[in-house]
Amino acid sequence: MHTTRNLMRSVAVSIAAGAFIGLTSGSLPPMVASHFDGAGHPNGFMPRSLYVALLVVIVFAVPLLLSIVPLIASGKAGERLNIPNKNYWLHPDRRDATLDYIARHARWFGYGVTIFLCYVHRLVVRANALQPAQLSSPALVAGLVAFFVALLAWLAVLYVHFRTPG
Image 1 (tube, rainbow, N blue to C red):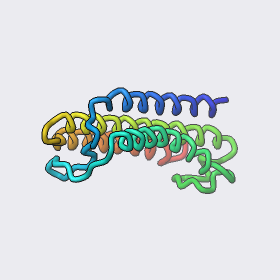
Image 2: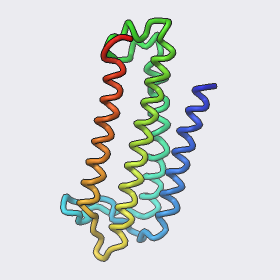
Image 3: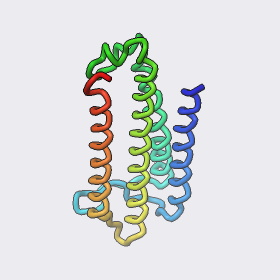
Image 4: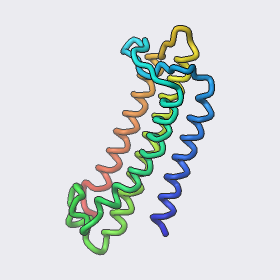
């Protein structure tokens, strides 16, 4: 039941992200500037329908995959997991709580990736509203910095949790 509820949360995040992409893609031109060089100039294009479909598939798949991967990794008593003090954390008394923590942590990472992808999509929409198309490099760099700061915080929390037993 707990796993089903968590999977439903990931599905809800995916649906929300897909809806965001669908609702914000209406102003895109028929050929979307979808890839940009370091200066923000477009150097790759694709049909709007392909861009939207591809992005919706990605934002739908990422949180779902990150919800499922810990379940797969936890098979066979967690022998596929690579965590410090593995014997302690996977002791039968702590195994379920440990696997739940890892699954919850992975879901939050998936949510972060999804938010970042939606942010980049918004930048692409804004870039395509300009003539000629121009991606805001400072906005992209700001988004990347924010994502990597969040990633470092996510990793730190994971490390601190598992660094020493009990």
